[in-house]
Length: 547
Figure 1 (cartoon, rainbow, N blue to C red):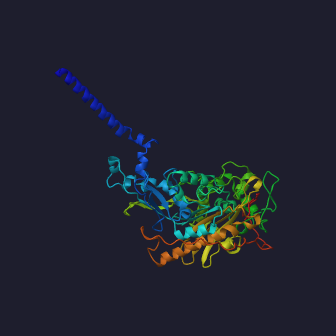
Figure 2: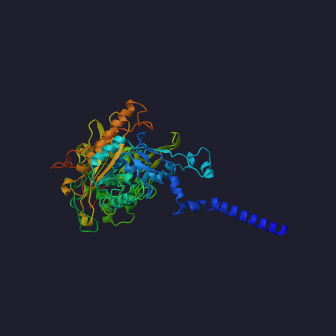
Figure 3: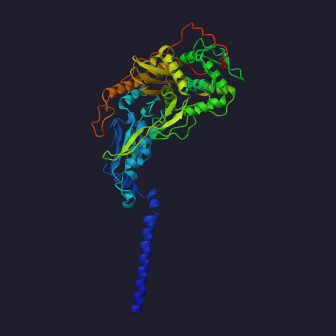
């Protein structure tokens, strides 16, 4: 009898050991797989059991959390959601996360190991720390100026600090209220269906994720290539460019919106946006050097993060001469994000170097202790310093006396370039209006801001839309605000931003923009370009975008 009892006890012990081994296997080996199983709601319940950390602008939170009383307890809320949606993105219990909410999700949700009091603490305890805070580089007043300027029209604005790469404004319009996607249930699904099927695509981040033909704003890249390659050595010398100009190898004539472009200099061509001169320059520079210059500015880069991913701006590597001519004036297959074109303006402003653009200044614990800080990094040297200084002078002249006069700011040095980019089958679509620029205070040693504005404005007639008329006034208002903030920071050291936790400022009402002045036109009788000195290489050209 005792023998049978011993056998039963041994069997029970064996079963107990097997149970413990299986429990250990589940907890140690299969834990991650079970956590990731969509049928397991424990991870979702734990994720939303505590409030998310905050995203800050000028030291003030633009996000929050609301106790829903449901199983997924804390829902994300947003202060002035449409204004900051291109920056924050959304954090949805149903549809996941985007933008900064996604790029910094581990820190905001409290799972980042850097938030733990001790190394491997969260792994051992299977817990999480209170969500940390993300301090952005956005300046609230510049963001508001850009948002007001677009006034609901389709388009985008990006403003950078050229010397550091800090993104000071990032606006995409029309925007949306991210808070309607925060929770669960029928209302959230209805909001998702409404937003994702809207023809205006409010959830598309046009500043980072949409590419457009850059039109004549790309002529800055072509001018840099011509100067760096030695094709043009004197910006005031004639270029031997005919008008009308026939694209090489075709019978297609490339038109000019401006007058006086025949045999015009590079300086005149940028001031009045001569298509023929810039197309011819692109052909004379050649495909290899044009591709190399475009890539130094950031075109064809698939790795750019700010920290959210950025769509690739395109400049084809294989083209025929007529296609290269069109690409050199921002047409054919050349496309760019607004961020990319802001980087072009920043390269000119920063003597040829592009600083790595970034949107997150630093991250902190819930108590305010810095976890990580984004350092200033060099992205690329787009052109030589001497070329950048020449382009600064030419862009200033375009604002003072050329197509970009609507971007001028009294008391400041402003350089800009307009663009009216054709698109659609047979270029029948309403052109996009572009303006890229930079601004420097008279008493400052370097430019404070570089900006790119694109306005789709599908309801405007061809004669009513232009880079100078539609986009330049928006850029001017953003740059003016940047100069004001810079003056304030110099007058009051340490005044940039405010501490986290301070009271949120009152909402600024959206104002209706005033009437937009039309783009400047060249004089009826264009000045005769100066004679070209002997030995200066000419430039033959070939095809089209507006000013």
